[in-house]
Image 1 (cartoon, rainbow, N blue to C red):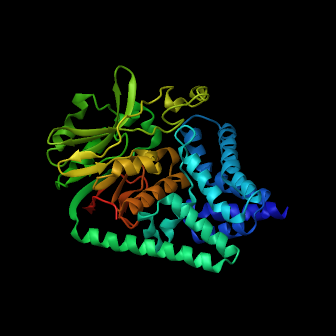
Image 2: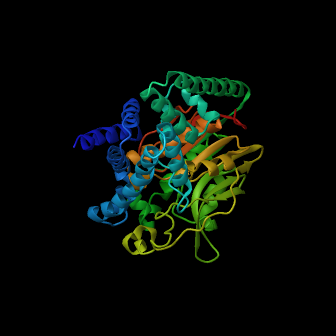
Image 3: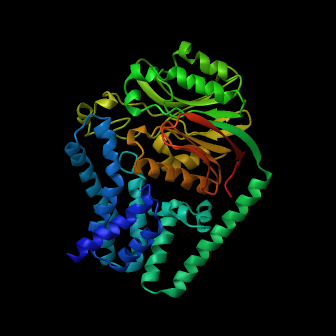
Length: 442
């Protein structure tokens, strides 16, 4: 019974930084208690509570917009939570009890890495190392040591602290601090000489229930195009709209005409769906300038269930009518888009959580523009967790990240992980923000 109540408390503490409350310091207490008591039952209860609280927001998409009842939604989510718990919490502590306590951070790290890539493209979500974005100054170490190394640093530091291994703890902290100092100084050097441009970020704020019905979605088109006309009137260096920003396909040339016309005033980066080769849908980012298509990117990492259903889960197409029974087609090129001398990495939606993809795409890019639609999750913890990944990538890459969301928040994130300017949830409008073009990581 003691393990049960302690597990409830620790699981809740671990959940807090991944919620809208963003109370990160309680998670350090939770991790410390967890690492002090290497107990399989206690870890399993803590992990289950953590994952369930953090992922309950996923039920919003399948109930409000997928036509599935709440009991069935939880019947789908709970087994997934149980799998994550057994793999991420139970297995590492079980292996630790068979070996040595100082191996626990390594076992936990390997579990994070494996589940981030497998199966079905992986689930790189709720990674302990993302907590580093909350740490003053230490967050700059992300430019040298990615989010998975941060998981190791944090867990090893707390493990050494719990066992009073002062010398090794001091050595680890010294490496952590020195890497943060190096990252900070290199970023400062880059910022002083970087070219600055003006960008306009447009938040379309179309309710998700309207986006799922084309007739209702079309009713927002004139308002969105009027908003875009206002945004480009100041002739910013780049204007960005979110994922699936408008109801028509890119190949519908008559509908695209206003966008081409406005691209004479400002280059426009817009997320649109397109149908090619008959019936193959693509989720893409299109870059328009001077009345023509300059470049485009097709989303590579498709979202399981949302954009395709892997085997043996094809039966869910009958339960989840919002995906229309059609699987999207993945793109085959990972590269930044070219706008003259400027290179723009354009991960779409949850691709921002896939480290290898984003790092490859951003190699040589000057900034990152994430086109997304979090309307599926309303203003919930899932939307906040998604934005958290943008802050991680800004710090890792040492670049500005433009976060352009249909529902909100939309904003610009500086290379130090801070939000420079933002638009609130479901506010239709646009913001101008000046960002610097930073080509290489420190």
